[in-house]
Amino acid sequence: MIVLNLQTGRAAAKINLAIDVLRKRPDGYHDVKMIMQSVELYDTVTVKAVKGDIKVTSNTGGIPLGKENIAYKAAEYLKLKYNVKEGVQINIDKAIPVAAGLAGGSTDAALTLKLLNKLWNLRLSVNEIFEAGKKLGSDVPFCIQGGTALAEGLGEKLTLLPGIPDCLILLAKPALSISTKEVYEGLILEDVKERPDIMSIIKHINERNLEGIAANMCNVLETSTIKKYPQIEDLKKKFREHGALGSMMSGSGPTVFGLFRDAESAYNAYDYIKGMVSEIFVVKPGNRNRDF
Ligand code: ATP
Image (cartoon, rainbow, N blue to C red; front, side, top):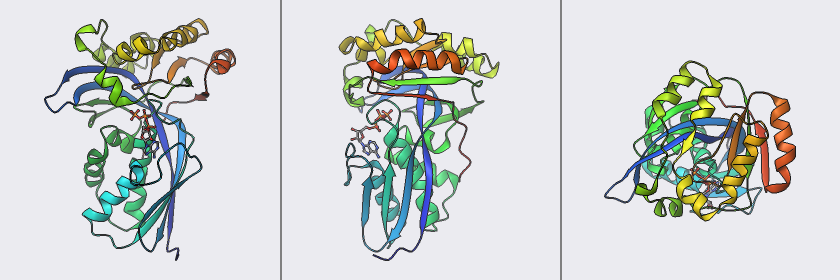
C-alpha cells in the first residue's frame, strides 16, 4: 500500500433545540422544522490516499465498516461522480455515541466530503459539497455548516442563526439504541399535544436570552419515543431538578441534554446522573465550521 497523502479533522455532534414535524409526505419522509446546534463533542476522521478501493477502520466495533458506513458512502459518491481513480482509507475515531440522536454518522460523512475534496484535489465549491451532503442524509448539510441553524424541508434547507449564549450542555445517553426510522414510523401526528414555537426560540437566540431558549425547547419526536421508553421523561425531570434551565431529548433519542448556566451546576447534575446512563458528557456549544 502506497501512502500518498493524509488529511484529518474533527467532526462535531449536534443537538436539536427544537423539532417540529409538519407532515408526512407521499414518499414516506417527513417535512420538519428544527433548530440545530453543534456541540463540542467530536469524532476524529482521517483519510489516507491509497491504491485500490475504499476501506473504513475505526476504534469501535459499534459501527459498520463496510458499504453501510455513511463515510464510506460519502467517499463512494465522490469517487463515482468525479471519476476518481485513487482509493482511500478512512479511519473514524469515534467519541460520539452511536444511534443516539447526536448525528454521529452524518457528521462523519460531512467531514469525509470536506477531507476528500482536499485529498483528491477535487476543488469542489461549498455548494457542490452541500449538494453531495444532501444525497447522503438530511442532517449532513447541517453538519457541513455547523454552528446554530434553522433546518427545514427534510432538514437540508438551512438558515444560519447567531450562536447561542455561552453555556454548558450536559449530554446523557441511556443504555438504549433507538432507530430514527422506527421513531418516525411510530409518530402519530394527531397525538402530538405540544409543538415548539420556533419563531419564539429564534427571537430568544437573537436576543441572546439563554433562559428564553431553554424554556421554549420542545421536540415532537418525544411523543413516540417516550411512550416506548418512559425513562427518558424521568431523566428529563432529573436534569431540571438538578439545575438545568431546560432539558430535552435530542433528535429521535435516546440522548437527553440540559442547558446549564455555569460549570458548578452542570457538574452537580453530571455527578447525580452519571450512574443512571451509559454515556455522559459536559460540552460547550460549537461554532460554525470554517474549514472549507
Ligand atoms: P441522527 O441524529 O442523524 O438521526 P443518530 O445519532 O441517531 O443520527 P448515528 O450515530 O448516525 O445515529 O447512527 C445511526 C446508524 O447509522 C447506526 O445504527 C450505525 O450502525 C449506522 N452508521 C453508519 N455509519 C456510521 C458512522 N460513521 N457513525 C455512526 N453510525 C454509523
